[in-house]
Image (cartoon, rainbow, N blue to C red; front, side, top):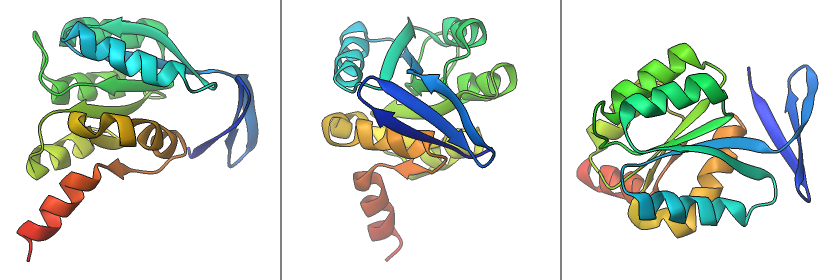
Length: 162
C-alpha cells in the first residue's frame, strides 16, 4: 500500500490510495549502537513537526523486539549492530512489523550492501556522512512510498559503471 504523509504544523495526515488513514505524528524507532549518533538522529527529527521518536535500540535483537512492540511507522536502522546485523534486523522487522518502513543510516558506502539492504525490505539508504543534508529528505521519500539512496552512493555507483 502506498502511503503519503501531508504535514501541517505538528499534525500529519496519512493518505493511501483509499483516502485518509488517520491523523497523528509519524512514529520513528532509531537503531544504532553508538548512543551519540542516536541522539543526533533524534535531534534532527525533533526539529520536524510531524515526527515523533517513540523508541531507541542499541543492538539488533533489541531493535527487532522494540519494532514488534511499538509498530513504528519508520525504523531508522544502522547496518553494523551487535547481536544481529542490520540486514537480518530488516528482514525480521519486515516479518514482525510489516507496516514499518525501513531506512538504513550507515557509514558503509558499499553499493552491493545497499542493494542487499533494499532486497531485505529497506526503502532507503543514507550515508552517515550525509545525515544533515539527506536524512529528512530520505524520511519523506520513504514515508511517501518512494526509495531513497544517498547522493554519494549513487554517484560512486555511476562512476564505477563508466
